[in-house]
Each structure stands twice: as structure tokens, then as C-alpha cells.
Image 1 (cartoon, rainbow, N blue to C red):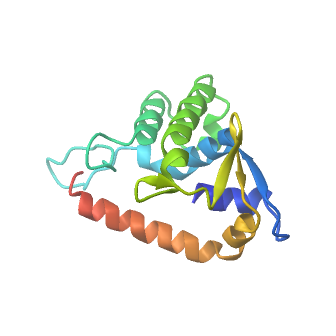
Image 2 (cartoon, rainbow, N blue to C red):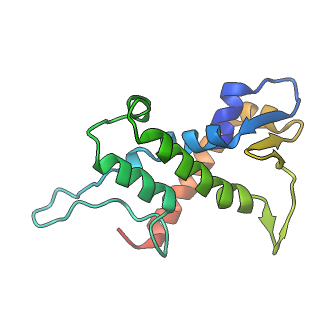
Length: 161
């Protein structure tokens, strides 16, 4: 979703490639996961508020970083949080995690990597290959629906709260 959002924001419908800074991707992850870093509760008597666990093992690193940041601040939006002193450290931590995890494994299939979607262009940047930004823009509603549906299915199968 982060790449599709950034294709909408920075891309064009010309079919060209699109350079994206990893930092922009990290900031988009923060926007997408901001509400996930807030404790929730069922509201039932005796229930405990906690952050939704999004992995079968340990909590997702991005969610943990956002949750820790949010626990020290009453700010309710990532846009408002951007002016706080610790926000740039949060962006750096999330960007490092996204680069080391999501961007590293997004194009892995059958034990190998196939850079069909993007390539690492330079330190801190990726290049969406020609036609990718256009397709992400053109099919954005479908991509958004599929991403949300699969995320919800993942959480349901996770079985942890």
C-alpha cells in the first residue's frame, strides 16, 4: 500500500520509472500503521487494553516503534507528530526496518529474488520499474481492497490479540 500511495502522490500516468526515497516509504508506513500503534480494548468488563499483535511471533517492529513513540505523546496523528523532537528518530527506525525487511523480501519467490517490481537504485532509494507506477495508480482501488482484505485475513488467522 505504501508504494501504491507514493505512486499516486509522486507518479504520473506516462509509464516511466519512478524514483522513491526509502524515507518516504518509511513515513508512509508510519501513516498506514499509526492507528495500529494505539492500544484497543473490547470494552468488556475485565478486558485489558493492548496493541493488536500483527505477527505470529513477536510484534511487528514498525508497530512496536510507533506504539513506543505514541506512548510518550498525546499527539493523535502522524502529521501533528512530525513536529515533535523524537519523530525524526521514529522515521529513521521505521525506514531502516522497512528497508531491511519489507523492501528486501517483497520480491522474493521460491527462495530467490526477482526484481520485477523495483530495484535498489542507490543508498536510500528504490526505482519502480517502467509501467509499475502507472499500474499502481490505475489499479489503486483494487490494490487497496486486496491489501486490506489480505491483512484482515492475516490478523484473523493469527489468533493472537
